[in-house]
Image 1: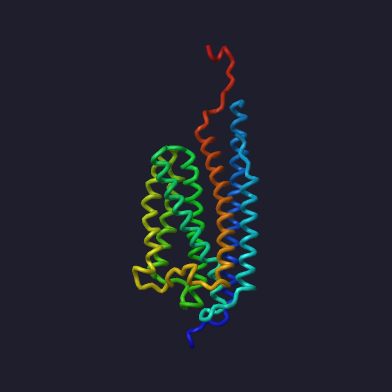
Image 2: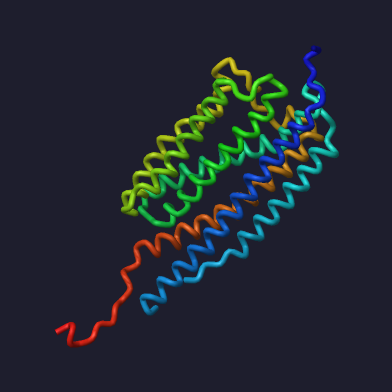
Length: 50
Length: 231
């Protein structure tokens, strides 16, 4: 034990992989949510005869 | 009005490219730190996430105040996007911090002031996000979540100053003057990427909130009824 951390690349990869999964997953979720909301709103507008 | 999301998607793509460039710089080009070695490379994603989270939380606070002052739906849509993004970023901060804590502190989690206050922030904004789903009346929903956001934001300065006020395992904030140039380059590239990604994602989420509200408050569809039925 000399107070210096050695190795640890697996933790580095894990942190970046977790960040990528969360950010990509969230972006995909909001883009999908947008298109769903737009389709639903357009269907509603057609129903009102607009 | 038909809403489009080409520009925000382009922002997300540019943000992702910046993040890839910053990550490559941080993992392959920047040297290892003297004491923490390669594990310190987690900083290049953890610190930009923390800066982005503080920025989004402050934006959420500003949107909540603006909604209460002007009662404009635009501010409520922005608030909805900011609350959701705050939850995502606080969750990400906890995950990255936990992964960094294990090799450096020897534990995945510690009830240290900085970690605890961030966990409180995550719970508070997750609660506010859930609150939005439970209130049917759009006006009440916007007002209550604005008030809750302002109350929740009280924790943000506590998170920031926690490492100065209390004896914390978490290190104090470093400034531009205390970080070597080699470490600063990937940090700033990743922060720029985070900002672009946030701008794009929050624009899309704001437009989705607007579409959902338009649908929610639209009058029911007209039904064509024969004249004899009307009589």
